[in-house]
Picture 1 (cartoon, helix red, strand yellow):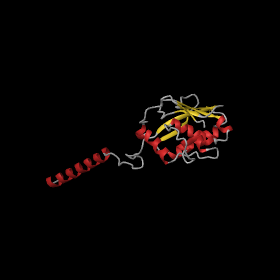
Picture 2 (spheres, rainbow, N blue to C red):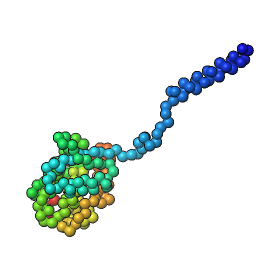
Picture 3 (cartoon, rainbow, N blue to C red):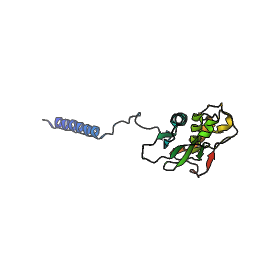
Picture 4 (cartoon, rainbow, N blue to C red):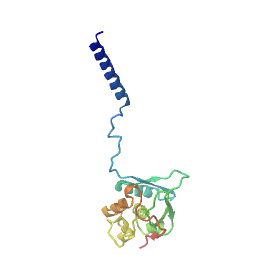
Length: 195
């Protein structure tokens, strides 16, 4: 084989070998669907235990759903039996009350769903959503209109609104911004929702 043909053959074989090696070691192209957005808010998951909230199950489920549908960076999930929950929900015979949050993952607050408010005509779902709102760091806004979830009993017995308004949603999202509650964690203060 003439020298120039031999060099051309060796060069072609070397180029093919290098191309094969580069292809074998190349990183696969990123999959945009599998890569989280850089600006996606971190979601804080808080567990609740309503095993001692007999008679309030539907109201708790609806109240939790209201918060889950209206805030994007906090997710409330039912705790598995025997596991620790950040939000303890119990049924009582008194007025509804809750520990003021924001509760942090690993922390703990208590929500008492009092039947005294129901016997006076207040809506169970609104009560549950309102008291959960305290756990997430929202104080009462009394007196206030029915459009404010945190106006509680001051909105009257005809009020059935269990949805946080724009300002209430924004305050909760701000408290849990960047995956952590920025505000001071629950300080033990209990807010009682009596008229």
